[in-house]
Image: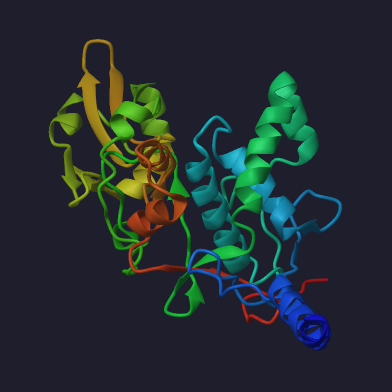
Amino acid sequence: MKKLIALGLIIFLFSMPILLKKTEGTAVVKPPAGPEETQAPETGAACEVFLTVEGEPEPVPLEEYVVGVVSGEMPAGFSKEALKAQAIAARTYALRVTSGGKETIRKDTAHQVYRPEAERKKEWDKGYPENERKVREAVTETEGKVLIHEGELISAMFHSTSNGKTETAKNYGGTDIPYLRSVESPEDADMSPRFEDSETFTLSQWNKKLGGDWNAAMFGTLRLKRNETGRVQQAEANGFTMDGREMRDKLGLPSTDFDIAYDPVKKIVHVFTKGYGHGVGMSQYGAEAFAREGWPAEKILFHYYEGTTIKKLEAADPECLKSP
């Protein structure tokens, strides 16, 4: 019996290293990750661009610039997905306009409205901490993301409020751009406080702004020719022809979807408008409406810029050029 016990002890001692080795192995080896756990491969260095913003003393880092544009172009109270869509559009627009940081960009509606931090603090006052946090989250969650069409940055135009559908690039500027065609934006009417507006002009103001010698008879011959999006493409009257975009600019109207009525007794011109802005690309209030319906930023962008894709830029990308 003692011999059997001794033999068993010897076998156990010889087995210990093998058992220990197997135990150590199971402690460090993990099972393969499931699809939801799979990690994306390491990416290259982030796209580092500094933009020269007109009126700013120092070049502004791209992502900081986007924070300023989202703050200036869209209400901070909008849904995060709408803010994220704005961030991606603003980043794309800036990189294209500045050729990757080599050209100066304006800080007003000629390009994009940019509000530096000092202005944001002043405007938002007590709401600054929460608004700043929300905007920065939207920018951080989309860092480096831009809209691409056929390998190039798109012209990511956007506007406040459509008239129910967006304008085409061809109607606006004469050039057909595949991703800037008219799409439905049906909730703008309910969502935007700027959907409808009206302006009044005295007859003398009207004549000064448009030129000519308008009178009741001339208003009687006025015809507004509309395009397929409902906007005025051309206005014609006896001795007068002007395209809708120029007329909007001269009169300072919110949009090119307008109607005109003349009061011959008071000699007053009434102009009624729908929409706010040029109408091309993404409607900001439309984006907010879609975000409230549960659309993510990507779906919103693909709706307004058909046929585009989203790409995250890295330092090696040709679109990402280090600027001085």
